[in-house]
Image (cartoon, rainbow, N blue to C red; front, side):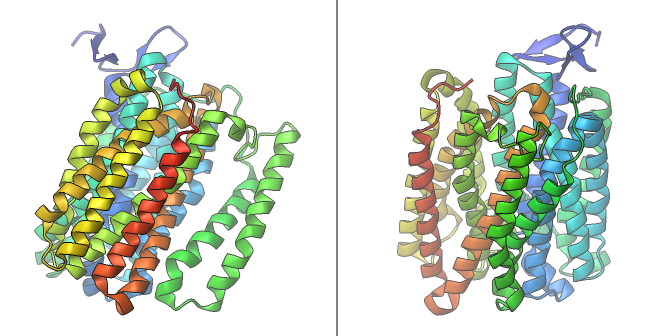
Length: 489
């Protein structure tokens, strides 16, 4: 192919970096594909272990508390370091941090897949979460800094679609890989779970080659040093909230969990005050309160929180219910969500065209459709348990997926629409941190609620109650969507 640029669906396609002029880097189609691959890997790995937990437990004799750490260790490291990863990308170059994060993600995935015992797996998962936190903020920051106009709107829609599909596809892929168990002859009969981590290694290798070829280097014109006090206080805030909620039930709610929860409001308030003071003094805090004054970002994040809490909790709970309640195998449990992924994909493709015509009301419509899907699931579980199979779940999960696909890509686009390119890394870090912390919070809260109800109420009633709580979160999201700016940039 010559160096001339071919344009496909509004995105410039070139074998290397495309530029509008000599000074402005432009993200071509291959570069966009590469950064979206980098966005997919961390989200897939957050959910891919849900269907693998029973086999990890059997193979490594992990126990409930350690299994919770396999999930929570990744989520905590990921959420805590996302904003720092965005700031570092602004300072030293987003492409450079993307390459470093991708390489580290491949190495730590290999460590997870070869872990000889449960605690080694926990440590490798924490390191994997840290690697993901270096890589993911660079995706949004690169899109913000190296696209504009219609191309940016399309890229943001594709990012939202990738994020949503990755969360569902992770669970589906995990089920298929565990069932296939290609490593059982080497590691033992139940060691198919290792595949869910080892599959990342060749993908990361391909991503490194593509990124070196097609992703342009961008950085902030006026990079600021890392806000050490803000970083430490944000870490303390997230850890004191998420660690006890994720570990408390499995550990029997020891004293340290209550101490952490009591400390959370103080650490969160201290973080806010420190950031506010730094902002007033003209410094660059980790999460600038002035950034939160952007109406699009503030109101968009208010919807991302309940949406992600419900989504994260649902994906964890449905994996447990299908495998332990309905006795489905990992492949069947994962593929039961295929209609949700298909419907999400269709809705996300239609989203940009609908947004141009109806603006943010697309989010409201998506919330109503998702609520209808979850209500169908509630009625289906109540009426057909325990004779429920994947086909019985199809109408509910498909309708819910359609509604989710109309919401998430548009919300991401709204949140970052007003963030200036110079603060793209900070804005992307704030949004992804909010999303990841909320996903982790959803697993912790809805997962704890569900597992606490099972012994006394049974699996069916516990699932129905949890779905109704998620339905309440969807209603909240739908009502909040009415406050979004009508026009979407």
